[in-house]
Image (tube, rainbow, N blue to C red; front, side, top):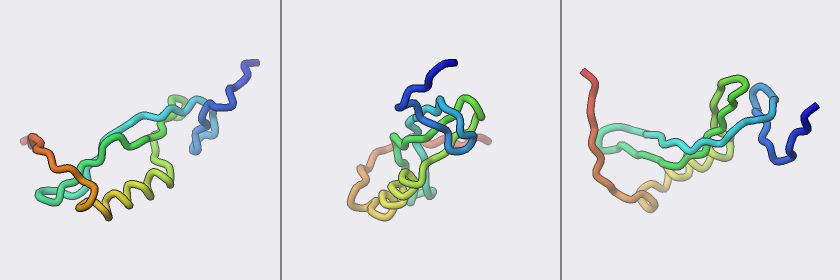
Length: 83
């Protein structure tokens, strides 16, 4: 039987070891109110195939959205629409 490392994350959804943290970007709003938040940690489980944000991460995203005027750096971004 293979022993599991104490630091190996457990998936909160299926309860199995092997979850991984990926860094993703998310957009909020649209048009002139568009906000892009980068480097958000997302838990991905190769066992059950699910990906999710922890409650702490969601609280931090809400905090960033609330303080966007003080924290955001303005950058130009190209936007395309699929016709």
